Image 1: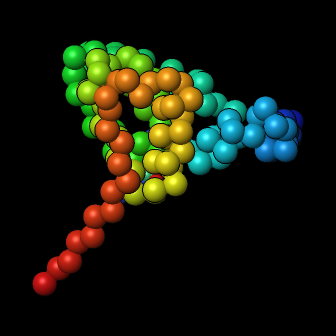
Image 2: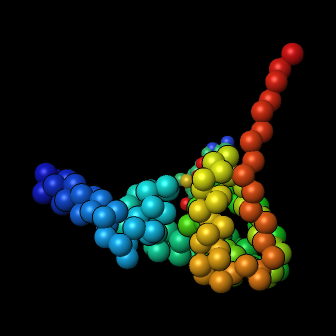
Length: 124
Ligand SMILES: C[S@@+](CC[C@H](N)C(=O)[O-])C[C@H]1O[C@@H](n2cnc3c(N)ncnc32)[C@H](O)[C@@H]1O
C-alpha cells in the first residue's frame, strides 16, 4: 500500500515535469485542466467506448455538458457525423483551449458547436 502510494506520487511529480518540456507543454496544459495527469488518451477512449456501448451512433446528436478542453469531445467529434456534436462549458478558457485542439487535429470541417455558457438563476 505504502509502495503504491509512493509510486503514484512519483508518477504525479514526473508528469508535472512535462510542463517544462517544450514538446509536452501543450498536453500537460490540457490534462491539468481535467485531471488526472497522464490519462488523457485512456479517458478519451473510455468515454467513446462507454457511450457507444450505451448506444451512441454516428448519426446521433450529442450534447456534451461540461465538455472542458474536449478530452472526450475530440473523440466524439471524430466519431460523429458533421454537425452532431455540441459542447458547452462554464469555463471560457477550457472552450478556447478546446477550439485550439479542434484546429490542431484538423477537425474544423466537422461543423461542430462549442460554447462557453454561463447560466444564472434568480429566485423570487
Ligand atoms: C473534469 S472536467 C471534464 C471535461 C470533459 N468532459 C472531459 O472529457 O474530460 C469538468 C468540466 O465541467 C465543467 N463544469 C462544471 N460545472 C459546470 C456547469 N455548471 N456548467 C457547465 N460546465 C461545468 C468544468 O468547467 C470542467 O471543464
